[in-house]
Structure formats: structure tokens, C-alpha cells
Image 1: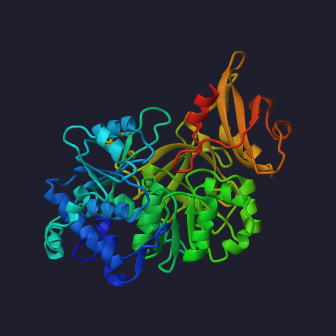
Image 2: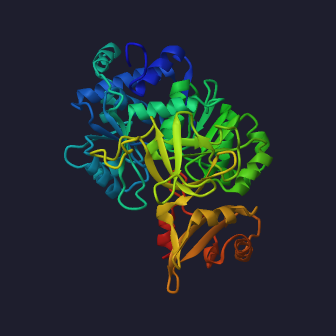
Length: 507
């Protein structure tokens, strides 16, 4: 933090909140009810940060975390940042092979695991990379050396350049090997401030937040956790999602703010008494993937309040746009850019797309990443613009509607087909809970369109219903030639449709 008090390290937000609200409860462990105050958390972060430095780690070293949604994740994350190190959150569902690859490519010096991931961590860590396990003496020793005064004296010497890398997050790699997005303290702090600049802000100091999104994902890591630390909102840590248990937690803990992914809202859509169970919730936000219009409408009617949607990506720390900007909640819409974020829609020639025409989303703002690990390649251009690969159109209000990923194009007889356009049509059917459209090989046309549809429970939706709707709304070459009604669609741990897995299953 500078002499003027301007934060330069994301962990400065925790220091400020602990100073102002030290006795307030910061985190509640959902299953056990154990509470942690802001003062207790800040103390733990000081001790852990000093312990990391005493292990011989130095500025810029990477610390991997294989931890679920628990207070030790929060403490280790902010301790890593406070010590001037780089946090490497990893998906707790990864195999040892996947973790080994990311540890080697990142050059991580330490892995912090828990009882659920220690076997994977031990099998993945190579020479020069140690493993400590929460609940084990190896972890306890990090924070039990010396007094807090000693610890604070050690971390006080850490000077953070806001452009230094705070977090290294490997993207999903759906179009090739995963790439590590380098997120600076500047970028993370900027996105927190952009979300706070909304009127009203995305989170307030008196909010109680259901933290069910996995903390290793950028959505939860900065747009929820970072925002909560900045505001002093209380978080209810939820290790895993269960539809009924989550609603019970909302009622018992007085939750007012629910940031989630579409599968959460799909799971709740068929449950009774939504209006009563969600009566105390002021804000519901869906992100990470599109929310089906039928589910959106279901919540608007049955819960009596809108589900706000947004668009973001790891490289933007992550939020780019939201329907909260203009307070216009519309099905299939991801809203307008946040304050401080600029967006262009660019056509294939590199020029601004004509009004009402789709274009690739280009983003510019202080929340953008510093390029990909390790050398900063493929980051924003010389003018600060980053081409996302996502395609969108603007409506008459200036709000964005996603069309698709360029890399997900299906080419039918030489014609470009955007799966999301077809998904939007199918999802408009009131009986559709979720849909995934992919391209599959076809002898006559090169590729053809296949649609896999999950109906709302008890609706009786048939493949012929879907086929009739597509014939009414889509050109013939866009209509799916394969339509399957399925019980469920595969998802990643963060709620995105796992189209890669779907392609493998249907191959």
C-alpha cells in the first residue's frame, strides 16, 4: 500500500477491512457453522505470509493451491499475495497427471492441499516442489513460528509493484493446451473497483453471500471473494452444491446475495416455495455460462426478482459486462460494459461491425491481464485492446447478446453456423432447461448440427417439439439433424457446459 493508502496489493483490501470491521464475522463455514472474524483472518494471513517467506520462497515464486471452499483457502490465498508471491489456484477435480503438468509448466515451489487432494498433490509434485497439507503439522508449522509482531515485521518489508503478477490461472484450453493467464494486482484491484462502481454496487457491506462457486475459479476468486473482502460482506463457505441444502443455508444464515452458475438455477427451478425460500435474497447473479431463457423466466415469476447476468473471462479478472449496469435484466442478455471497461465489436476485416451485425468482442480496461505465462505473449495490443474470441450483437439498448465462440463454429456446406444461435432458439422453448449444440462430421456437408436437450422435469418435451421449433426459426442448413433428449448435460466444475466431453461421449 502506498503512503497515501492506495492499495497496490490485493491483500491490502483485507488489511483495510480488518482495521475497520475487525470484530465482524467475515466467513462462516456452512457445514459446521464455525465463524472467522476479519481480525482473525488478517492475523492468520500475517502468520502464514511470514511462514511462506521463512521457507525460502521469494518474490514471484508460485504457490499452488489444491483446496476446496474452506477458510484455509482464503487465508493461504491472501497470505501468498501479502508475501509477494504468485497464487496458482488449481481445480480440485484434476487428476495427478493434470496437476503434474501445471506444476511443471508454472515452476511452482509449493503446493497447499487438504485431505481430499493430498494424494493427488503428492503424486504430482516433482523435485523442487514441496507439499503441505491442511490439518497436518506441515501446514501448521507455517503459521506457528514467532509472534504476530515478528510476522508483521517480516511482511512489512514486502513492497508490491501493482503490475507484478498476483495470480496465475490456467484457462480451460478448449482450443488447444491450457494457457496461464497472468493477472496482476492492478488488474484484480481494478475489476473489484469496477464492480463497486455500479449503482447500486454488485455487493454491499451488509450483504451475506452464499459462496458456493469453487474458489479456484476466477469468478469466485475475484468477483465474489475479492469483492467481499473489499466491502466487508460476510461469506457463507459452501464446499459443494446440493439444491435443497443450499436453500436451507440461505434461510438459516440470512443470505442476501447469491452469485452462482446456471446449473444452480436449473436445479432450483423445479423446487417448491422458491419465493418463500429466497425471500431474503436481494441479489441473484448468474455467470460463467448462459442461463436458459426458460429458467430466467421461471425465477422472475416464482422468486419475484430478476437473475442478473454478466459476461467475463479469466483474462479480464473476470467481469466485462453485466445487466446490472443499466438495471435491465433480459433473457439471453449479458448487459453493458462495467464502468471503466470499453468494448468494441469487430468484424472479420478488423473494422467495427455494422450496427445489428455480430462482431468479435474486443475489450480494453485496467482489469485486463498481462499476457500468458511465462513471457506475456498474446496479451492486449499496443492500444490496450484484447480480442476475446467471443462473438456478440448489440440490441437497441446497447446491451450485449452473445452469439458464440469463433472456435466453436460449425461449417455446414461452407456456411458458418454459430451453435449459440441455435441454442438460443431451442432454449426459448418453455420446456427446455438447458441445451448444447455441437458440430459432428457428415459425409455430404462436411459437418452437421447436433443438439442435446435437457428438458424441465416433467415437461414431456420431445425431439419432434425441438425439431418443429427449429424449422420455424432457423434456416434449413442451421437446423439440427441430430436431436437427443437427455437427462443431464456434462459440466465443468464451474458450471460451464463441457462441450469437449460431450463431443467425446458422442463420438
